[in-house]
Image 1: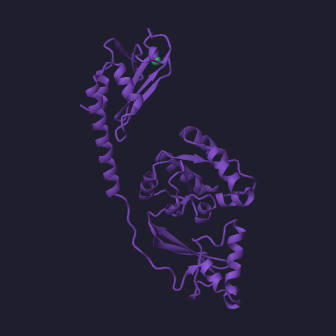
Image 2: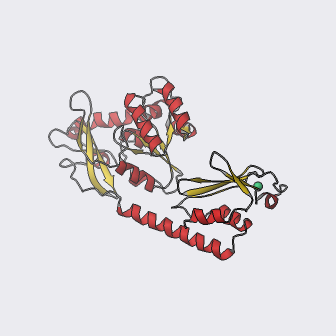
Image 3: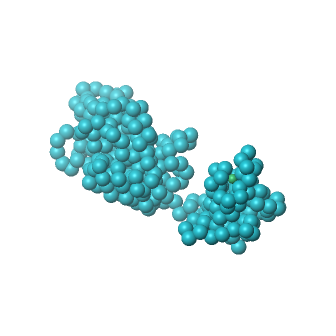
Length: 327
Ligand SMILES: [Zn+2]
């Protein structure tokens, strides 16, 4: 028997089934919560996926269990009110913990790994170049520093590199770091000319994961590195959320807020975000803003961040409605 089966086995004998899948019975919670006892079968339990949810429509008590999660205090409390013996509740708690740790272990072994890669020859952080700055270096470095500043970013940020090697003199290099190692990079041309980007690709990589602070409750997912660095978020380096990337994002174990670019490809990103169960934020950006970095240039970091977080939506229907106006 699964944990859900066992929880169901303690439901009151007097109960009925609704067409929508709820099992209804006199709620067991209300008088414990200062509300008069339920006599109208306003307690309900329903199965979803492999888990169960309890909802009392009398006093409002809610509790749920999903495999891969621990047995919450509210669910243990509910079991007690339904008359489950303490030793059964303890056993269920331990079983839930075991399933949880098995799932984590499985996740850990399937996490992607990336090979270490070289940056263009002689590449060093801009901050290092500024220490040995002279006119010869300045000729190349000044436009790059101006460019970074024009994107409202700090040229001394540890993610900005430059290399004097041939073909890279007029490029800003951004390394792809993962667990401290360099696993790829992109080099953006400053000024006119093609190709705009020369990249050492790393499929499945998520940019700026290393900098995600433990104490943040959410992670902001953007398309490009400048967007990500503007709001201390991460970048999927394109409009597609790959499975490997989703694994890395999920492992952060926090709310994932996807901020698409405001272009046709962004609409695809939105659908992938919904598929992964992520929140999507499509804020009321000022006129002409097409991505997160633009927004930070126009509004400043705090204001842009505030708008992103407050516009985050996780209901698929509402996300799609919003997307219709936004793109
Ligand atoms: Zn109740």
